Image (cartoon, rainbow, N blue to C red; front, side):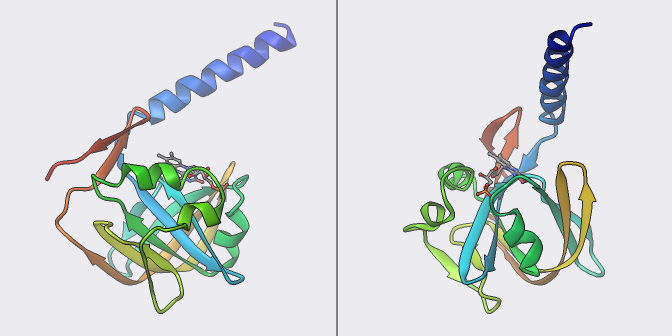
Length: 167
Ligand SMILES: Cc1cc2nc3c(=O)[nH]c(=O)nc-3n(C[C@H](O)[C@H](O)[C@H](O)COP(=O)(O)O)c2cc1C
């Protein structure tokens, strides 16, 4: 096999792997932190719960993202679980600069200085407990300090598309 053919095969396998992983339906969150006086946030669907006692959650941050340094050094993060009507927020936090993402967006600042996205159906404010290096991502395990939830319908994501999840 020549080098080009090998590259094509790798790209195809990568696409197939992404497609297979995209069969797993998730919720959609915006994860935020506050680092060196600035707010950071990104759309994230790798969030999951880990343990009830102690209360632990996790998500994984891609090492190449601009906010990787902020999330791995700021000692904590806040997860806002987006509602079915917040697809625009999910799109906003997956592009542009941090300043553009937060501009004009209603948020609530917590005692930890991190922000919750207003209108989210639930949120968890967490202290960063452990970083597990895993391939091209770092898994950030957090211990829940404070949280709240509502019965509103969450936003979902499957096959690369956003979907409203009814209750
Ligand atoms: C639906 C969806 C889910 C995403 N989930 C994650 C995730 O779990 N981890 C991650 O690092 N990036 C994830 N991203 C990509 C980030 O939101 C995107 O790369 C963001 O622009 C990174 O911002 P930054 O480079 O300013 O740090 C996701 C994007 C979308 C649209």
